[in-house]
Image (cartoon, rainbow, N blue to C red; front, side):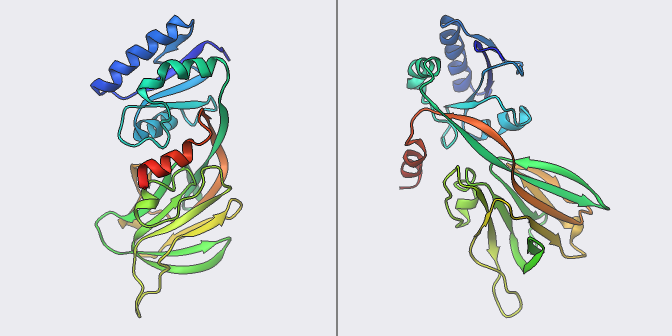
Length: 267
């Protein structure tokens, strides 16, 4: 690993490109080497844009273990801590190691089909929904125990760091980003004489395995959304979710950053 080599991921909008050019020059002035073509030898991944850009960078890097930090040029900034006006102080603090290294755990989803599976990872969440706005009918198991036969618009499985995203918008709980557990939240659940679905989210420990089995006859009508990217669930027998098998590293410069974000965005 080269202490002076830095990867930069960036949005292609005009504002982000302008900030990227400024940042590159400031870093070069401090004897750093910059690459747009990510290197496994870099000491830092910098992402310029909003939270969506941060998620894309994490996926594009194949969940690199090189620490990430975000410079915010978007609207939301749960992952993007550094403001444009703070670029110089950020570089100083990075050089002087005035930061905390945090681990953000990922959720894995194994999509089983005829005894084989494809594994996906998400930093924020997976959402299972119908591809045609019909009601989803899903059997839900936790550690092989049948919990419910869900009926509604869908289910969200989210990480603590992703709990403030789609999960929050459907009424799920906010979990501190370093908690060892994950969350299942319903999207417009139906609770009536005909259907009995939980109407609130469930928080599970990190060692619990969540299994979701589509009701027969609906296998070709479902899709899974992985951090905003849609994937059809054609002929998928069932999905198994695990938490904490993989993580990314993120630098935090302000110890109160998480609570500042909560207050700024929601209160």
